[in-house]
Length: 270
Image 1 (tube, rainbow, N blue to C red):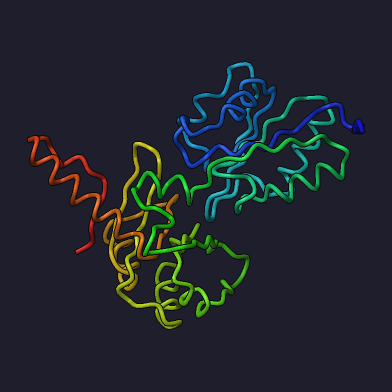
Image 2: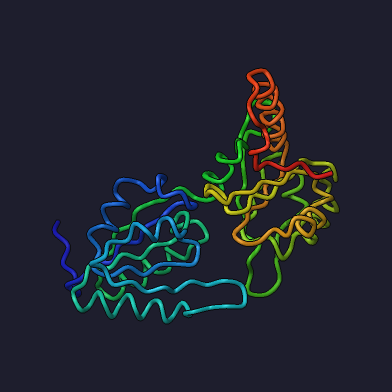
């Protein structure tokens, strides 16, 4: 059955992935190239912004902690306004629109307004950044599952810390930098061993990527010592040990063939 929309325009919600433009899907790249108007977030990397076509009008609506250039309502009204004008609007978000990206809210609102919405999935940061950091989300004998949570909350971070601590899974925390001490304290109090391998991945999948590995009890110390900045993920679980093994194996290989091992961006905390 053919659908009829009240608006002549269309909005495409594009997940741009964690930063590397080569991780854009073919469908996402086509949507960007065909867009008349691009509305993009703070977590859309500079390398991906460089792919925006010259013919497209662009709006930056990024949100960073303490610095919001546009409210969600402002963004909603911008999408509605230009779609009703008949434009092909590309709404680009870092990672995946449906993973802590409010894409579901925008999709429902636009549909309620009679606007045609397409959704193009992207590689979420938890998958893309951990892979670039050589940390598998699951690994036989170490973790048979993973849990993604966001530490961003309007008020209090209300989680069942005891249940999280006992999952024996990989935990990936988005937007957790400002709460690293609280996360460490709550998980340890909930029963997770204080020496559980943990990592920060800063600017994952970009040339600026930095990875710092230590233990759960050291989260705040690692962050402060290395001046870790957003965007960054926190990864907690036994799988983090795989990255340490990879570094050791790579160093052995480099020594064997006489190459320089100083280029590694993986740091082990003291």
